[in-house]
Image (tube, rainbow, N blue to C red; front, side, top):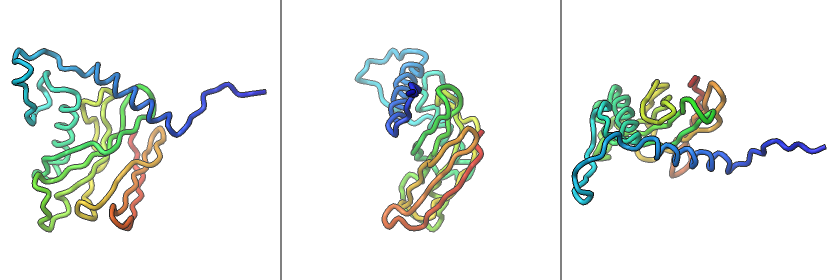
Length: 174
């Protein structure tokens, strides 16, 4: 007797995330078209999340920036390091990163931070800040998600150059 169920392979998550990203690219198109010629369009940083013309990516980054700036107002450059989803629909868990714009260390490790966030399924809004924490090593620390369950996520970290300073934390995200 053979089992004809789905086989979950390591690359399956990547394929599903790419399919989701493509679907969201279509779903998150700007709400209204600009009347400016294509050559004149430029991207400028947005500070508000209420503008209907922002893309989902811009709204998510603006929300992440606002969450990080509650800890340190100097943090302006933000990015998404990792994204996990428990199901095809529903909230996602995002691992974010923020740093001061000049990347210069001035003695405060909170000038580079990481954070765990719950975002909506369209990746346009931060629903909840799970945790934010300062880097233990300036511009030399890697953080990524480990395992994900229906209610918790593992966050792993280590020094980028020497693989030292390991970190392992579990967070309830749901």
